Image (cartoon, rainbow, N blue to C red; front, side, top):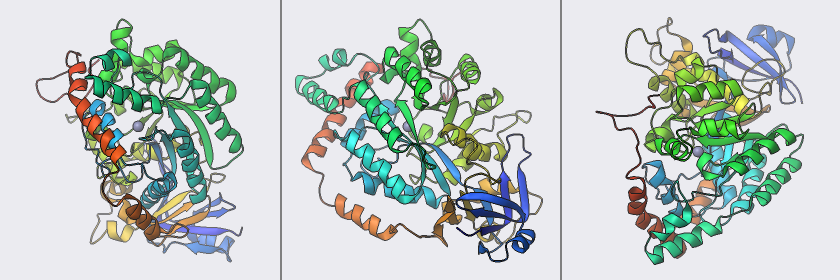
Length: 510
Ligand SMILES: [Zn+2]
């Protein structure tokens, strides 16, 4: 493949947590065979590569491709499919009432949305489908990433307990009216997979994609309370002996933290995971909203990373994660949308803007998060979480040629003071609609705002066609069951001690 130059009025070569990010004015990046081969002033590179194709008009902002560090990618979102926002413990059950959609279409749709906001790599966690289709759905989903050429860290979520509430399934079911209990038992059983089968599936994917530049396979118990401790220990062992990464959810809500504390004399889920040998390098958790100070120390000591998903935490009433303390403690933090971005569109730029504004403690002397930190999270931080550390996340020689060009004319129009920090401006004003071109592994997958390989209108039309008409009876039935269960779920948690402040309670306080 011949050399291509990508030029920008501004080029972000590498975002640094300490504010010393490397930026170029009127710069360019040369790439060949999907790898960055040169970085410097555009005029110098133009002289060195006189025959190279040039992408970019010289007025745009060139950034490293963004990494969405936590996503489930239902494509057409749960919200669009009739799952309204609500507290996670209720919301998750409402997911049963979503219509199934062809996994290839679903994945291509979510890929298009992500690429449109400059995302080139995603941590994709496949959760069980509404019906029993986890295994074929996972295979078709992974194939769609390969088809679209998007970099992916792929895992299938595993769960073997606490399926409806954080407690023993049978005890909970036996307190329900008979019909409802029978129905929910049937639904839960349909998504049941023995652990050995799950491990075999993950090993199969790993074998299929061994040596791939664009696919990493991870193990993923869905959360501390959703797998028993023996299994969590086995997952930790398998990860270390077979070289898998691990991605899981952790203390997304106060109830999840209380579950472990009630069972284990006040020990938090993070304590328990360290105890069973689960945490370590290559392990990442999503959310971490209700971590304690001790927990932050445990994650830092074990080099366990975190994905911050602020929109999801707001939409599902989970709270605000202590990201400044995580960063201060030396934890690697990434940024994700969790298929629940604030405008329901997986816009990573907007998600980063939200992170920038959310972590601004009151008081003149309390330092806020910086744009440099947030962009680091969404690039180099995400690279670590997705097991592509050292390969992506910056535009340095030897890294994969993943990048995005942003329309700076729109952002700086009609005027922009030249003394502003340019990264503040990027997160303060840019949104997905400003993304002009996206390059993954040297291929321009989006150019002048149009997909070069994916048929966007065709995919939208196929989805419209597949989902038109009334709700299929089995979906309507699952939806009815999920709604009928809500009061029993509320009752289950009614005497759990979760913090209720005098006003709003958004954070862990210990
Ligand atoms: Zn999630």
